[in-house]
Length: 296
Image (tube, rainbow, N blue to C red; front, side):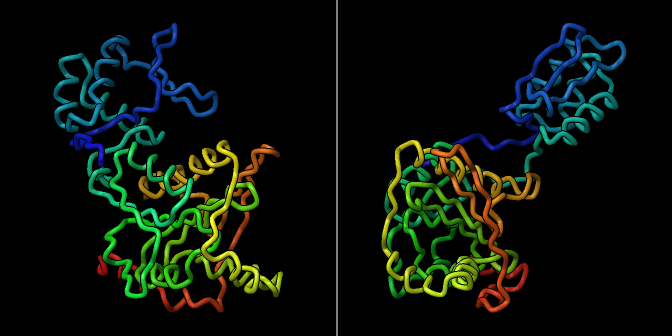
């Protein structure tokens, strides 16, 4: 089931941001002490008039309509342009067409276990279309999944053939798993641009020559952790997928060329780097830049 959302046609103020009024009439966007944006009403404009224009930034009004309506509230077009510019530079607004529409996106969640279920539920709640699978057959073709991104969840070690096919087809994928009671999110693989799962295996084998033998024993195994760790790991994974969906406007996901390792017992989130390896097959398997979308 997919939650349907109305398609925004205009400028949208980030709904997560609280809009507050200071005693002197200035309007504050957000309440983070370091990131909040404070704006003064233009000369001759009351706070209530400025707030009326801010309420138009709900995604249902085009920029020309906002400019026209704002005149009735006493704001000149130059005032509105400055307001939108200030909000845009602070990363607080989005304009229709600059990011994917949620209900046209499909994310594939591959795996069977607590993380697969939790990530799928979180994506569905966000209005993202989710498809599921847990086996990759001998005649499998990841291009038929028609997914913007694939989440490889629960399996401690990803199916090597599936991982290679995702790279060869240019499909971004994120690994999410539980290791010794802790959560591990990443790496997020952008074929042709970042390290891949095999790069990480090659690097680990360089430090531990027995890693290939150990890794083979983990194939088809699902990790275990407390409900709190599962929830925390799911939250981090959904955050990384949010960053993928907000590209290119948002900050790059932290799991590019890296894993994010969640240790609730020690109250730590550790970032471990996994750089690209020149000897990895992803250097020639990944399609050329701009080619991946042709496969979908």
